[in-house]
Every structure is written in C-alpha cells, then in structure tokens.
Amino acid sequence: MLHAYMHFEALTAHSYSYSCYKCGYYPPVVIMDLHRKGVFNMPTSEMETPPADFDGRVNIKDFYDSVTSQIICTGLLTSGRKNPFLVLPSYHNWAPWIGPKCRDGDIVFNTEHEKLHAPRQAAEMSDLQMTEERLQDALINLRVDMVRKLCKQCGIDSKGSKMDLILRLREEMKNRSSYDKIFEKVWGASGGWAVVMCPCAVVYSIKFNLRAESPRDYADILLSWKHFPNIAIYDFARGLATHTNLREPENLPFSPHEGRLAEASNDNVKSAAEGKLKVHLPWLKSKKKDADTNCHPLTGSSEHYTLYDVFHEKNTKDPRDILRRIALVPELAGWVNSQCAEQLFADMRKNNYFLNTLTPSEHIFMMRNKLHHYNTQCNNKTEESIKKVVSEDVLQLDHNGQIVMAAQPPTEADVTTQPYCPSMSDLLPGLTPNQTSDQLNRRIWAVNPLPAQQKLLAYVLDKNKDPYEDILSYSPGRTLTRCDFWSLAFEEVEAQIADQCFQVITALGASQGKDVHTFSIYLVVTWLPPFHNDPLAALPDNIGTKDIILLPSWESGHWIL
Image (tube, rainbow, N blue to C red):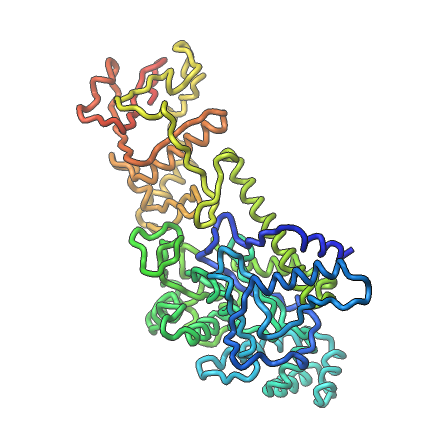
C-alpha cells in the first residue's frame, strides 16, 4: 500500500512550492533546526568519494527528477527485478529541496564531502565541539545496556556506572573515526534532516544529511537562496555565522557585527546582561523607504543577523553571544515562535517508524511529499482566516508570493471630471429621511468611552512608553506603532491611521454585502465644523476633484458625517 501511494504521488503534478502566503517566497526571518531521528540506513563506508573536480554544486531539478523516476519505475516492475533508475546516496549526487521561487536557480550547494577530511580553520573549531556535545546528550538518553554494548563495539572498558561509560566514550570521540562510529550507532547512518522554516511554521527548505549535522548544512541552504534572510534563528548561531562568513570572506553574509545585534563592546554586553539594551529593527514591520543596496525585497535592509533560539541562548560560553538574543529586538520579542521547528518534529515523530525503514531515495521522496501537504494545510488555514474578512475573489499572490487583495480597475462610473459631494441617500442607500438616529446606529458618537476604553487609549497615547511598540497589524507586513497614533490629538491625522479607518469601513461594508471603495492616493480629508444652517457654505474655495469631503448633516438631532 505504501509503494502504491508513493507511485500515485509521483504521477501527480505537485508544485512543491514550499513557501508561505504570509511571508512570501523570501521570508526575512527564518528558524532552523535538525530532526535527529529522521534517518535512513546507509553504509557510509561504501560511499564513494566525489570526483576531484566536484565543487559542491548539484542540479536540484535533475536530482529530484531522477528520484521521481525511480518511484514511478518501482510501480511498474515485477517483484525481484532491479530498478534501472535506482538513486544511491553519494556526495556529488545528493541535494536539499528548496522551493523553486525561493532558490537562486537550479544549481544549489551540497558540500557534505567537505566534512570528510577537510582541515578546519581555528575560528571554526567550535563547530565540531558543539556537534560532540549533542551526541553526548543523546548518549545520556540511552539505556545502560545500550551504552555498555556501544563501549564493547568501540573496544572500550564496559565496566562501571553509566556516567563512567559516557566519559570514556567522550574521550574516544576525540578521534574522528571513532566519533563517526559512535554517531552511526546512536543516531543511525544518516545525519537526520535539517529544515529552514518561517515563523508561520511553513517549511521552505529541507536537507537530508548524509553525515553528522553541522552549520555547514544550513549555510548550504541559505547560500542557495535567491535572497538571504535578514534574521536566522539557530541553536548554534555563533558557529553558523563563523562558518558562513569564512565561506564568503569577500562579501560577508552575516554582517554587521558578525551577525550580532550590536558591536561586541564591553558596554553593550553589560547593558544586554542588565536588560537595558534594545535594538530596534523597524524594517521588520515596515519596509525601508530608502532601501539599501542588495537589500531584501520585503524589508529593504541589507543587514543580516543570526540569533539563538530561546531554549539554547544560555548554553553558550562566549559572553558576547548575549548580543544574539531575540529579546533584544522589540520587533521580534513575544512575536516570533523560535520553537516552531521543534513542534513540527514532535508532530512528525509518529512517522519515524515507517519512514526510517525506507530506502534513502524513498525516504527523501516521502518526506518532501509529506511536508508539501503540511505546507498546503498551513497556507489553507491562512487563506480561510483572511476570507472571513474579505471576499475570496479579491485575493491573489503578488510578485513576492504574499497573499494580498487584488487592485480593482475603476469603471467608467468611477471616473468623473466634476467635483462631487455625495448626499446622505448616496452614502446610505435605502434609508428614508424619517428614520431615527437609533435606526442609524449613530448614538455611539454621543457616548463617552468606557473605563476600559479610556485605559486602553491612555496606554496607546502614553509618550513615556516605547514609541516603536507595535499596536496594530492590519495587513501582511504593515503595522501601526505607538508614535503613529500620537497624531490623533492634532488636526492633521497621520496618513496610515486614516488609511486603516477606511479599510475598516470597507470591511464593514463587505460584511453587509455592500461594495465600498476607498482610496488612499492623493487623499485630502477636509474636516468641517458643524453648521446648523448650510454646511456647504463652509467649503473652501480650493476644493479639488480628488478631495474626499466628510460633510456633516443634521438629522434627528444628531450630526452625521
């Protein structure tokens, strides 16, 4: 049944887009982690070394087309016949999966062959040490009899307590060949699969490691992307920044400050430790007006930082790594879920039993397919939540892959060359002049705010608080901060506030089946004082054809705009 299902999926025209409707094709913030128990059996000793001219670049499309061909051919062969399209793991013919819109072409990096005997630079030695620590954690979780058996297989004294055995294995792991042998016994032959996700928990890239995980695997993925993310969250952020910058020394991927949020000075480290340092990155919420050179298309910034996830930020021994904490960025703190990868792995854990029994090529095909359906479900939930507010007909993906409302072309009736002042019958069709203010639901304008509303208003307008704190998010990538609302006390209203008010009117009209069109371009709002006699007499002489007039009208003892 499993092979029949895989044969069906291989014959289905899936897009495998691997992108999020909210974050688009190029997410500015990504979370990276490894699923250590997603492995497949593979004799690493039998893997051939790559050709001498292999530079770590693989054609992703050709590789996955060959994997699909193997799955299709398996469904057509009689039992016992050898598959002519069989794909075996090799360092020069193995590729991660990256969405077609996200990656920078079909040639991607897979430099796992460099893990074999490549000498490490001094700045990168912590890479190996961190991997050994993870393996030690896995050893602690094994039963005592399993640890004793592992010691015997490595030729180590198997007598003593569990901790004595682990300490002996720790010393043995300093030898690279012994380390690989212990790793294969504990985790399986392959190195698990590494994922890169957006904060919405949509998977953008997945890499099926042949050997033990290291920052090299994530650097392969990020350097294969069309646009490098501004924020990369990883449990070994320092190692990722060091390794990636060493690979691209002429154009450092993680800069400024080597991917830290501030210069690694004693004053900054001390301020961060005391909770006094805040690093504002407003372009995470609203794109820079004056975009940087070689910037990210969604933020307009060319700055790139690598931060620790919240559960590993205290594991580092370098005091400067306190400048890599999420809590230092108000635009990220309390918003980004750095554990969404762990939540995905917990959900996928039930599949480990049957996935880990598949051949390597079947394993990666099945995982790519399962994550494709997982991403589709996430995007469908996002779309359904948006449809509760706007009509399905106006939703589309823009050039960055984000879901937006489609611009509706104006009709001939919308175009006029003469000034136009709508009457109340135009603004509220179907109402008769005799309808009372209760029927118009206008009594709210004469009611003072409730205590809870007054408290909320005082909080929003408090100038002693952070002016860049996000108060309202009203569309993907667009937010209103506290300082935006400070214009409410003046005659000139901040444009984004007025724009949001008009969007609320549009949404309310749509909920009642009415088409309400609002325009935020060349918008001039003229506020008129109430006149009991003729409001038109208060209109200024310089009214333009594109002005929108909020005209007061006296009905049933109340002023109505």
